[in-house]
Every structure is written in C-alpha cells, then in structure tokens.
Length: 276
Image 1 (spheres, rainbow, N blue to C red):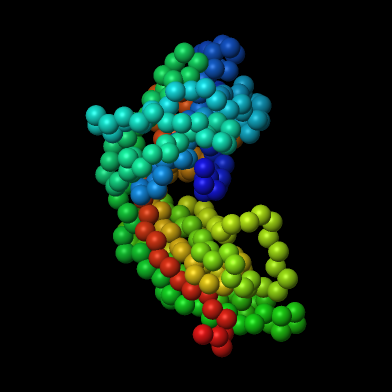
Image 2 (cartoon, rainbow, N blue to C red):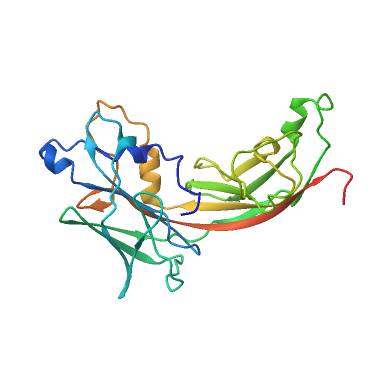
C-alpha cells in the first residue's frame, strides 16, 4: 500500500464508533467499517476494513478485519481483492483493473456472515490545473545568512478551475530523493520519495511553500478532485461525542465510505540560485 493514506480525514475514525442503540453489544461488535478509496489511473490499494467499537471507546483502537471477502465490480466485470501487508488492507495486484473517470464501481465486503455494499462514480479530472512557475530558484541557505521571513515569498502556487467550490486536495512529491537538501544539516527519518498532502479545500489554489519541501530537483504537484461521498464525510469530521448521529456513510449493511478521486499532475524544478 502506498503511503498516501488519507490520514487528514480524522472523521474516518469516528465511523468505527458504533452509535446504533437499536442493536445489542454483540451485534455492534460485528459490524464492518469500510474505508475504500479509488484513484483514477492508479492501482487499487487503498481499502481498509475494521470493526466497530462501542460508543465511548477510542475508534483508533478498532480491530482490523483480516478474513473478509472483498470484490469490486464494474458492470459485468468483477475483481476479487487480495489481502495486503498492512493490517486490514486489501487491494488488487493485477493490471487488468483500470480506474477511469465516469466509471461506476460497486464494492462488496463479506464479513461476520453479512455482506456490506457501496457504490461510487469516479469523478472527472480537475479542470485548468496550472502552476504559476515551473522553476523556483533557491538561495544558498546557511546559518545567519538569511531571514526566515524571506522564505515566505519562495513558493510555487498550483491553481485550478473551481466555480462550484468542489473540494480538492494537493499532493506534492519529490522525484529525486538523492538531490541536495534545501536546508543545511537536514535529516529526515526513513527513506524513499518525499511526499506531503494538503487538507481538502474549496479554494481554487494551493501555495507550496519552500519550508514544506526537503530537496532540490524535480517535484510533482498532483491536484485531486474529491467525490461527493468523501466531501460529505470530511465536512462532518468535527462531531460532538455526545451526538449519537452516525457520520454520513454510503455503505449499506455496514459503516464507512466508498469514494473515488481523479487527478491532474504538473511538475516543477527547485534549483540552487546561480546554478544551472
């Protein structure tokens, strides 16, 4: 599973807190919570299953579901998903499943003797995505040689058309982890490509500040259009724990969300000022 888990959606954890007062504790403990996200043009590897926890307990401690049967369908096509390495994660390793804008997908999850289902339509890609610059010159930054406020103007802004105030978010990934670091004595735990994600926004732009980045070299900004199911859940992420209303869910026979996203990518370079 790629490290693009939608961690900014704090509301997703609240889905695991069962608030159905019409069922007994035993039934509540055996409801599946689905967090399933499809990305147009990308592998299917962002599906996670947990079980509900009693109201008042920490949803973050919800047990994962390791033995479910999970299938995706599109019309007459059907794909059986595999268990992935991460606890509770499912995905499809083959290349015959292509997620495209306009596709209607259905998910079926068989767990605890029940079947939970959901449907989602993959949105079209964001419109009019562009960068205000494709090259940003970065001065040599050494202790005492720069004022922190001067860094605020060093940024790349990505924008898109958004007359309908639809939620979008932006991923930024560094494509050259071996490149020179922007700041002196910078050390990051872990290895591999650098990647950050913005919170969803109804605006039509996102500023990528130099302080958010790590290395010089080529970078990719990816603008994602958010589907309505996800927008509803995100907009409901702040909920009083005394409120017994369940968060929005498009999963029948369970809880959770099944949603899809589409994206457009643009690339830019960070170069040291005075260099080539």
